[in-house]
Structures are given as structure tokens and as C-alpha cells.
Image (tube, rainbow, N blue to C red):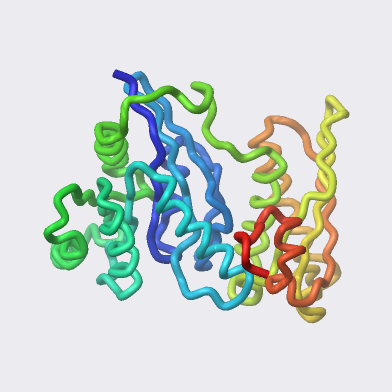
Length: 304
């Protein structure tokens, strides 16, 4: 029997959902950073075996929206509740549960579908087993009395117990066909992944200075040259002062971001890349629905 279906990775911001997705598919398809709400889209990660095909949905973390971008991120996470056959609630095992975890668990419980509570980051507690035991008991209460659930402790960073999660998921999926080719790992196009890689390098290098103020748009992705792919990208910031931070002293920051992004994109594409980055100011872009739509972040009907 071949099984297939959609599995939503849900949870609060910065609990390691994207790292977990990358580990599950066996390669990097979602960017990661210490900054909350790094993920901006529902990225599909595909895992195919002789038992079936799992389509994991990596979602933005649930948090209170503060602008149009926040509304979009919240809607992306909520949409996964309707699309998924199985839910995986990812939590940070090194921290006790909070109100956000309780709220997400309640949304899952209302669906009545199978749920797996994943205690991630157990590697951070390898010398504190008593804390893991305590937190596991506290988190287990989120699904107390819920008939169809289980708890798995793992480390997305090291890969510990990852196979246990995949096996638990595939057993609960319905019988069905493969939705993607056997060798597919994501639904993302190369230009979309490239934009995300650029954004990741910017966040990692600027840290707290520009947490959510930058958007990346790929203006050109030219594959006509067999020897080198040419990519032109624009980094949008929403304040003039931020442009200087991105460019850096004598262009040092933008050079570093470009070099790191180019090297990773070349590794992904297995081809030489010419990457040109430009920085532009677009004030209040996070509140502009037209601009968000141009970036592939369309708001639901009725929202303006």
C-alpha cells in the first residue's frame, strides 16, 4: 500500500521548523536564522520512499500580526490547518510551554486529526536529562485526553530520532498516489530559493539591526549562458538609514552578503553564478498589499 499526504509543521517562531524540514528532506530548501519569523511562505518539502510520499508544509511561526506582512504570515500558518492530513507541533524542548503553544495545540485539537508533538532541540539538554523529562511531561498535557496523538523527542540539528518521526507520519497518511516526481524535494523554483538564500545571508550578517525590514526580489534569473547563470536581485529596506547598514562601510556588508549567497547558490545549482545585488528604499513596504503581492505574498480576499 502506497500512502501519501500533507503534513503541517506548526509551532511558535524560532522553534526549529525550517531546520527540521531541511533534515527531513535531506538537503537545504528552507532558510534558517536565529531571528523569529524567518519563514515567510508555506514551503513544501517532499520525502518519497517505497512506503509512500510525505509532503511537509513548513509554515511561518504563529504570532500576533502587527502589519500586512504579519497578517500574511498568520494566514499562511492557519491555511495549513485546512490543508494537512497530519499535524506536527514543533516545540523547543529546552523551554517550558507557553500560551502560544497552548493556542496552536488547541487549533490542532479542533481538527480531530492525528497530531505528533515534537520536542525539538534535545541536543541542548544532553547534560540536563531531568529538564527534558520535566518539559516533556508539561508539553504532553497540551494533548491530554486527545485520542490520536503521540510525543517524539528529537534534534533537527543532529538528526537524532528523525527517522522515528518520518515512520510515525507515513503510517497515518491515507492511501494515495505520489503528488511529486520521485526525485523532487520541494515545490520551490530555483529563483525563489535563491531569493531566500540572499535574505538569509543578510539576516545572519545584520542580526538584530534588520530583523524583518528587508525583502528580496529577483529581477532577473538568466540561464541562457551555459557557463554562468546571471542573477540580479534587489534588497528592499523600509528606511533610508537601513540602506547604509545593508551596504556597509565602503560596500563591505553588501559584498559579504553577495559572496556568501553566491557560493551557496552555486553549490545548490552546481553551476557558476554571477550575482548582482542592489539596495533600494521602499518605505512601509510591509504595510503595502500591492508590493507584498509582487513578492508572492498575496493577502486573502477581503484584506486590503
